[in-house]
Length: 219
Length: 106
Picture 1: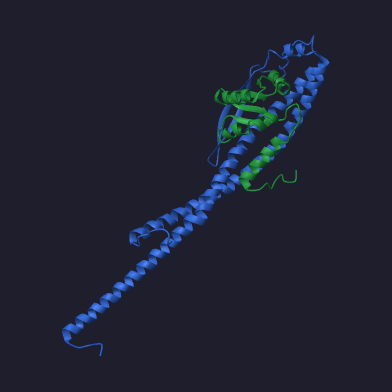
Picture 2: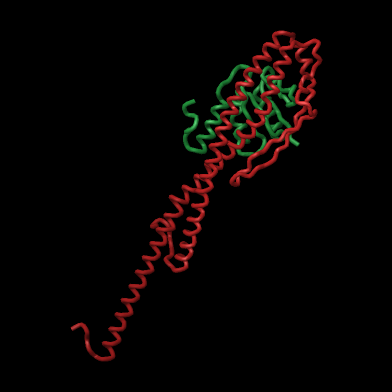
C-alpha cells in the first residue's frame, strides 16, 4: 500500500484488523444474500416468461376477435357499446419482503362481484363476435395481473442482485486484500522498529560498559 | 386504493375498458409522455403500455423501473407482437446473472 499513507502504529493495526473482520463477515453475508436472491429470481423469472408468453398469445387472439367484431358492425355502434364500462377494477398494492427487496403484491377487487358482468351493452345492436372478444380479453386479465406482479418483482430483484454482486466483488477484490496488505505492512514496520530499538539499546549498553570499566570490546 | 391504466393507440386498447381498466388513448409523443407522467404520479399501480409506445417512451419508463409502483408492463398492440416484452424479461436476466443463460435459445 505504497500509494496510501498509513501510519504504522499499534492503534492503526488494531483498527485495520477490526475492519478486516467486519469486511469478511459482510462479504459472507452478502454472498449468501446474493445466492438466495439469485435462486428466487431464477424461479420467478421462469414464471414471468411463461406468463408473458401466455398473455401475449391471449392478447393477440383477443385483438383478432376485436377486429372481427369491429368488421361486423359500424364504428359508432361499437363506440357506444363500449362507452360506459360496467365493471371497475380496484387495485390494492401490498408489499412482500424477499431478502430485503420489497416486491409488490397486487390484489384486485371488482366493483360487482360477478366476474361475468363485463358486457357494458345491451345485446340488441351488437354482434355476438363482440361478446366473444370481450370474453377472451376478460379471461386473460387474471394472468395479466399476475404478469404485472412477477415482472415488476423480477425487475426489482434483478437490480438488487446487480447491486449486491457489485458489493460482494468490491469486498472480495478491493477491501479485504487492502486490509490484509495494510496489516502486513504495519506488522513489518513495527517489527523493524522493535529490532532497531533493540540494537540501539545493545549498542548503548556496550558503550556504557566501556566507559565504566575502561576496556574496549573493539580491539 | 390504486387503479389500473392502459396506455396506447385507441385500436389496441379500447377493449380493456369493458374490463374496468382505465384506458388512455394517445396519438402524439408529447401526449404520451404527459399522460404517462400523470398516470405514474396519480394513483395507478399498474400501467399496461403497448410495445410500440413503450419503445417511444423508453427513457421515461426506465425512471420508474426501480420504484415499487407503478409497474409498467408492455403488452402487444393491434399491429402485432414486436417481441419487446420478451426482450424485457431477457434483459432482467442479463442484469441479474450477467448473461442470458435461461432463454438464450428462444
